[in-house]
Image 1: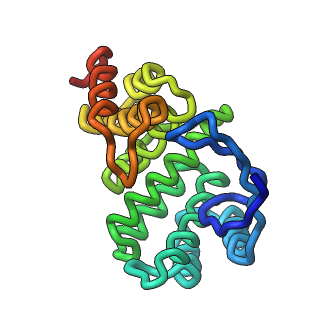
Image 2: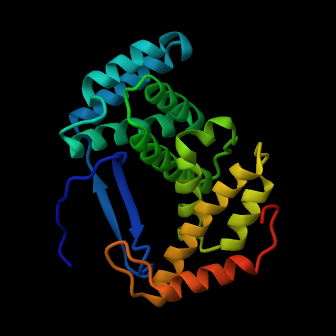
Length: 231
């Protein structure tokens, strides 16, 4: 069809390819242009890079809060777009551990709600998957468990959805030096969500958040066929 223009938040500037999780054969590209907000966020990151991280945390966070605001926000679209850009840039430039550390500070200080924390951790996980798939080494640490394990949910969902290698995703979960069986289970939860998207793309029928019974049945059957370190 013809090109069209929409406003998107949380994406770095550049050309981005995508596919429909429900119908992976449907593909396209998105051209993201920089806004004044994104340029300002980048200027914060450059300043942050030139100083010791921990020493300048409060100054950095105060600047972010001044522009993006706190939870709850009456301007949800602008709020989510601003923080989405912020954590996307932070993940790309400093890695997921640093992005999650700052997110944890904001949440513990009551500046971001726990539900927002989970959503942004999920987005950090998605951005991190693309760094990982491009060959970047990611050190999985305790930071990845914050915000109800949002990072693992986003990272593993994206891993399965795009690689379509469910077994490989489970092997990745098993290979991680995670501190508890529960943490590893949350890694599996993300992979299971990605598997559901995969079967939706094959079997169809899902709409408005509804997952058909046959998709659930096939997903569970595939899960039970595997042997892993956690039941």
